[in-house]
Length: 123
Length: 127
Image (cartoon, rainbow over all chains, first blue to last red; front, side, top):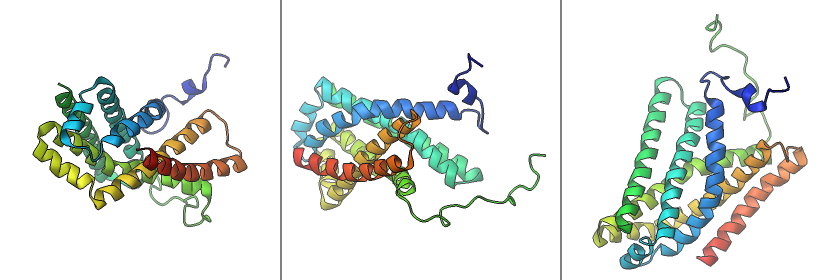
């Protein structure tokens, strides 16, 4: 057993067999967001309520644009996996599958719209 | 064999049995804040898209997000964001195997609640 690790013992168990990977993705994205969220709050926050030209000029700069893009993409992927846990807990049968598909589509769409908007602001 | 007695098995005691505790309440708040953040996030995505499209579209989105309704949503989102962040740190600490003693776990729960209120007020002052 000397070569056995905790993770190795957990992989492949549970009804879906993919819970270990799901949990690891939540940890990974949460650590990334721990860095991104404060940066996003203090770059995006001051721009709320500013005039349009100011907002366009600010998000044309590399740092605020990259922080916003990463926060939206990593944030919505973290949401996609997190909301699935809630749906798994409270919704059953076909409604569960429909809810997971719908929220996954919303997550990817919102991330894509955010990246498109930032690209268009920056270029 | 797997389908024997499906749906008629004894259940373990659930929420309605237990007295409310800070450990369970702070866990439930984590779920509520995490999923509730979708509302504020979609508003922000709309705001970015409107800014990229035209000044007229931006005026509409910015008008909504800076209205009293928008202020309420964004302030609650900020509180939810800091709470979920602190609860996430607590989760990482627990996952690493630390802070699981009952007294410590309860302190961490109050820390998440108090800390998120303090961080929200600080952020509103700084921005």
